[in-house]
Amino acid sequence: MVILSIIVAAIMAFVSFLHFYWAFGGSYGLTSAGPTIENKENFIPSGYLIFIVACLLLGLAVLPLQLVWPLPYLQDFVSYIGYLVSAVFVVRGVGDFKYVGVFKKIYNSKFSKLDTMYFSPLILLLGLAYALLAKYGI
Image (cartoon, rainbow, N blue to C red; front, top):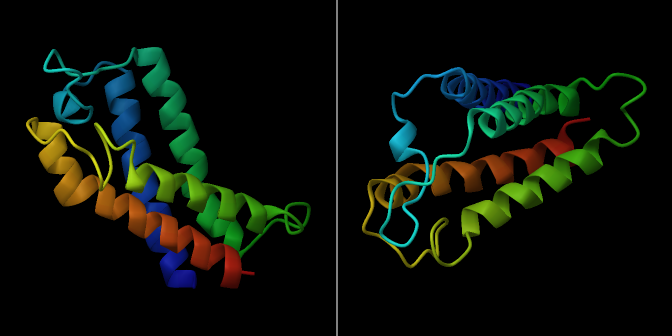
């Protein structure tokens, strides 16, 4: 479980730093990171919103380590947080049945192709990893 927690933490840290890069004005890969809404422009949130997501993702990079080596005052409920995060990731991986996830209906954008090939499978695997760490980590 230690190796799994380190791998998940590294993936989440990388994704978090990518979001920080976008929040502070970086543009590489940003147009491929969100769906195209109703054949219009890509959905790109504000830098402030991207910054909030980056902070949340950074917290999720710490969580797998806490699931294996919890701080004493977190030990009683950190596994519940792991299960909650796992459920959120699985719901995102399954998708909204239109723009994102395994069961999306719109496949004509660059994001949809990347989501099908990389994003949704990775998110589903992360959901499974958080569930395993929540169950067997402590």
